[in-house]
Length: 464
Image (cartoon, rainbow, N blue to C red; front, side, top):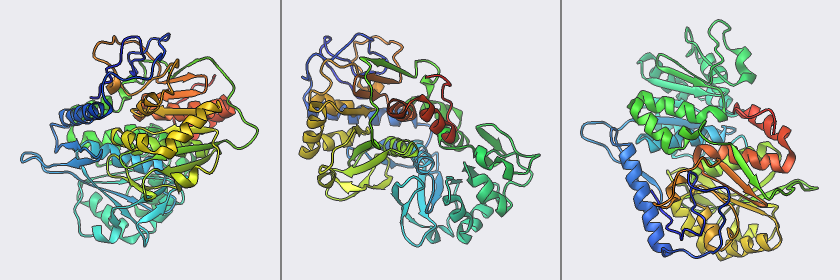
């Protein structure tokens, strides 16, 4: 994976190698930016191949997108993920990205007349195809995201009902999360005599004798789960059924789920107040290659907390292709977004996107002004490198994806999220939920963050 070879006096951008007292004292790299990016892409690709070697492997291309290649001994697994107006975006994107990272050929199909849909939290996603094109396909897995009214839109799609019913009749895998088990599968008769879980708000709609309250439940070919906060586990349960336990375990580790109980949730230095006397306004700049899970999760959680979130593309088009091939439509182009002032600017990760974000003159200017005005900014996963290059981590404590650690550093039990004054950084992937909730807590207080976490069905401490 990627390495930042930074002088030992400087910050090692590593979630496992940042002593509490370490600060950035200089913005200079010992590697050139281009050589560094090549190291990132090469090592990420090597890790993906190593993790996925028992399956039809996915590899990370130089553009930052995942490509799947079939193995002669292991046929490619085909997965259908349907979406509609009001689908829960975190659930849809996490399911798609995790399964693609596992090597599956995932088709995102719209049950609407058009490919572009607006998800329940306002995110605009673009499907690969219409559901009508999938009616005669045979899938190894059909996975239904939840969300309202998205689950109703899926339920009312006759083509999807037939595809999923055939899946169940022929004993192939199918799954649903959040509202979808109760709102979609139940009326179709596809949870009969099967123990099922769903979002707590819909639990009373399930047959009482067969309802369970576990976060993830596997009953024969059917797998169900509870909400956005359990989607990583749900997706890995599906990976395990498709590819086996060892592949799921290794993929979970690469998504940083293995650190769940091994390190503190967050650590804060130079504490300052983030609260504002108006609705907080947050900018999330994105580019081709941005990490889909991270950008969607941050936006979804902040919008649930009633933050005004603007997603801006630094490309010529508002539509971007995220790191695993997910298509996302930004709210604005960066030049339009630059006309406003933001309380917080957050950079999602994605090695390929980092280069494109770094080259945006408008974004560079906005980040510089954000720092000069002593407003808040942050980054997750690989994108702290963008801040580092601009000297915005100088004399700051920060953290990033483990791939950015130097070879010479020693592992320490660093937190998932580091806050230093008005800078916030995180390891990324699974930890991005904690990152977004930490922002909510700083802006509104712990009670608001806990309330949002409960809606996500994500375990969060009772005390701040």
